[in-house]
Length: 102
Figure (spheres, rainbow, N blue to C red):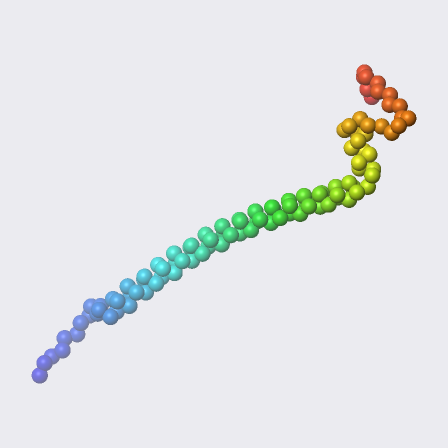
């Protein structure tokens, strides 16, 4: 009859399970870190795109307002008078050079 000796060391299966477990933990942590970095990058990009969208929306509103103002003859008249120094026939313009009164 043989006497079985008790082994108190860690057997191969237990070692393999521990190594696989550690590997999965390291893999999960690195994946989590990468996902958080990607999330931060996407949030920053989203904020930038929102700011661009708001700027373009404001620019569009300004262009539409200028279009509406341009349809009216008052806009054309104000540009002609201020930038081109045009007047209606029979109008007389008096310009005074010198100091402005305060």
